Image 1 (cartoon, one colour):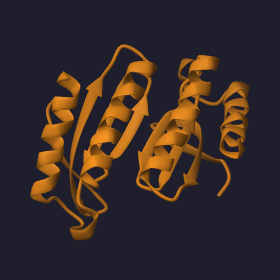
Image 2: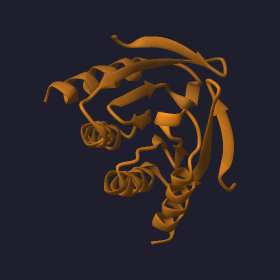
Image 3: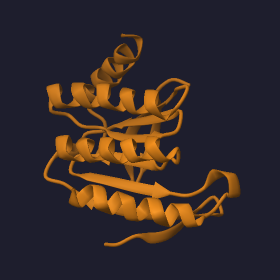
Image 4: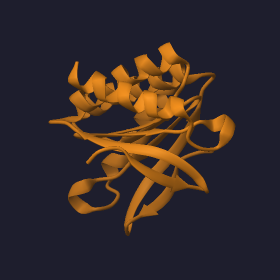
Length: 82
Length: 82
């Protein structure tokens, strides 16, 4: 499943699920996405579970989606391939 | 706010929010909880956001709460104080 627009509390967000073999690999991915978030000073919601990470990007300041969220989504994908 | 019972998809879970100064400290806490999860081979859902981590414990095998979840909740608190 690719990035999907979701709406929570009337705020449009961009969300994608990433599957992994176990908890450890999922948490490692969470940390890699955390690294790019810190670099770009733009922070997602990261739901880490056994074998799965759900990444959600949106821009708090505008309560919605900004070009930057799509850029961060693409960066998130590139972290997965790295 | 302390640990609160929540129900999601008819499954009873134990949930608590932890507040932090920034994203980095939140992610560091997520990793510490991840460490005890791996040690105990019992894994929560960890929602990491800027300044906040929401930890949710439940036992997949019984679709509900087991004594072990309360033990893990207490361990989670002790990680915070450590």
